[in-house]
Length: 111
Length: 115
Image 1 (cartoon, rainbow over the protein chains, first blue to last red):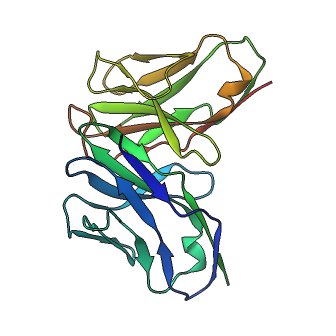
Image 2: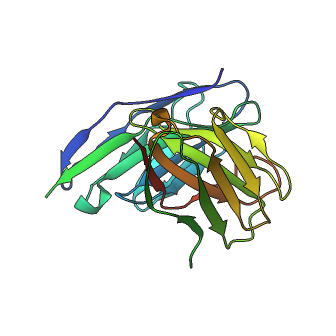
Image 3: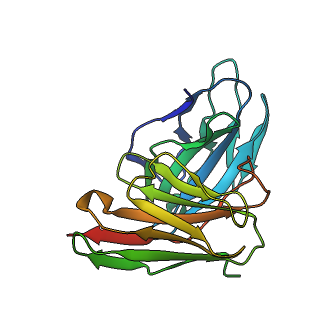
């Protein structure tokens, strides 16, 4: 069946460091891929999405490219801020499995 | 700009008690969802409703019931709470009349503890 695998956290970085959070997926067909962010005490918010191969989603300085050849959708940001501290979820949608969330990666940024 | 509103925010129950979690959205969305979030397991879908008057089971429906009262409201009921149902519960909604790749909008969650 379909599945999403994220790198385990927590990930701790210094402010202005480069961020990569890995996400790989297993799916039949052509799923849509998402990154959601969850700030402390809040629900998830959509950060970015990509609906077909080679699409790049971007928002708030974050980017992720839908790579069908490597079945990946890694999240990147060139210079992180303390305010980026949150839990990040990779998610997949397909008509076969509906939406599946990864287990989440906690990110902490040191000033 | 309320979006998705969940009540209560916190609740402690004893084993065997019942309760209903309330959810309302003001975005005129057709689809609504209930998830539970447990450490290290991401979000798991309990039930969803693709439109008013319809509900379907998700990945972990056992021990729960739902009601889509109208287009705005989707409630989750625990008839006889068990410690395994201790979790954070999230309600979400999305546009469209079927479970689709439309982005979901989440409430802030209900933190439920079963003693």
